[in-house]
Amino acid sequence: MSAQSSLQLELEPISGVLGATVQGVDLASELSTETVAAIRQAFVEYHVLFFRDQSLTPEQQMKFGRLFGKLDVHPFVHGTDAHPEVLDVLTLPEDTVNFGGGWHCDVTFLEEPDLGSILYAIEVPPAGGDTLFANQHAAYEALSDKMKSMLEGLIGVHSAGVQYNDGGPSTLSKAMKTKDADLASTEVLHPVVRTHPESGRKGLYVNRAFTTRIKGLRRNESNALLQFLFDHAVEERFTCRFRWQAGSVAMWDNRSVQHYALHDYTGHRRHMRRITVCGDKPV
Image (cartoon, rainbow, N blue to C red):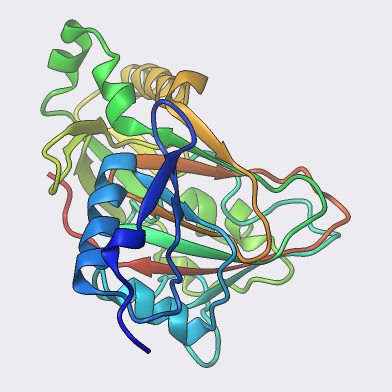
């Protein structure tokens, strides 16, 4: 199959602050170097890209992901038998919680959190199951100069313990199996304000799921500041919302967005397939 021309890359923003739908790209095809570079540029600029009407095998999805870096294996959730890098994100009709529910950045409990995630919709409910995204550059830039100055140099403590210890929310899905829960309480340190390694823009880098406290602050001080940042970071003015269809793909920059998979479809099944691209240490 011949390489796909970058001239077919068309972008349609879906909000004023982040997110764009990419037209005219078949992710299962052989993409040209120019097309991949254009996707990467749009990825950094828009923070989350959406592709409709795709048909991807796990191998094709992995091949696309590898155009942007090495694929990661989740430390606490089992991948598929054939491909440990691939997660079947499955919510059953009787599930009371879903994987990815609540605002978060993926795997910030790692020393080198993922660069981004690529999620492919296989089966979606007739209504509901949208995903929200929040631009953390915009959230940071909306802060006062005094607050920005205060946050400079602060270090957040991140841990998977609340989510992945036995009985945590991310262990309750009947269809998804977790592992190594005894390692989930390991703590790592990341700056509260992260500089994006490609754009150079600063953004907030704390999230309710995995940031447990701010190093060096008293507990009440840390709780108060984090509560403000958690709420501010996902204000509606910084967000976009994506309605899934079977065959849709979302590719988000984990270095600059938070996301929230809504669970408003009880009684219905939702099946997504996720891969993640390895990242680097936040600075």
